[in-house]
Image (cartoon, rainbow, N blue to C red; front, side, top):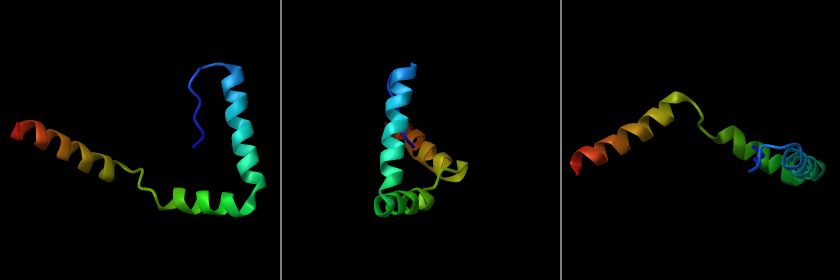
Length: 60
């Protein structure tokens, strides 16, 4: 996604401009889109990472 640090209209506008600039470069946009579609954002992947973190805490 396109992130912005400050919660204001100017930061949001800059993020949108970055998104539109990337979208206008179709080859780059296709790579970003393909990469994003390969990511795992479901709870299974997140839960597995949390289990690893908690296991590390328990091991000390």
